[in-house]
Image (cartoon, rainbow, N blue to C red):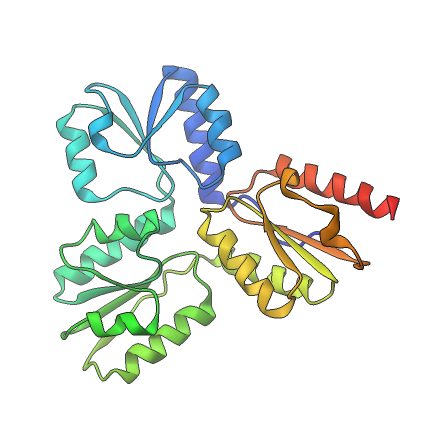
Length: 277
């Protein structure tokens, strides 16, 4: 069985279609970091001329640069403009919204607090749009916030449960003012709900997506809470028949950066294994 909601979201579709369009026009385009967190998609686009780099310094002057779905920090954008490059912005609209909210909060005198993973590129990009944002990924990080009026946002792919838990913990810390804007992605939430609903009905659950994909990791984490036989695989190549031994029903979902061909290939091969058993 496949979850009711899974796979590509609008932001990912936009980033990929934007990349394909500009590649057809330019032939060679630089991406500041992987366009999405899926090795298969990155490899496919690389064959078409998309060059992934980790730093602005690796991009030559006058080149065409794609800003990936996770966005980029203001300082990075400024450096790119100094190089006189052609910038194509494929930042997810929800990430762009969070960047704007964070900047507005800071202008209004709030200390920006981002609930999420400090190492995720989306979060780093939002931090880079402010002068002093603090990232809290667990309750122990709350002590690093300091004092002041707090303006709180959340990494778009986190779960409502996690955001709520962190808000409760921050509130207990005794801050005088907390302004909270819900920046969670509704599509990510729908995928989380559908995954949890399915994993409760099956013997074994497979979550498909890149290892670096935050929303896929969150899907796997949530499913693991309700079904211990949950496995995060990137594609069919990572499947082992031993995993399904003793299981009669299997569920499949996929992160927002997982292409349909990976999902279709996995489901087809899994169905063949079920037919054999």
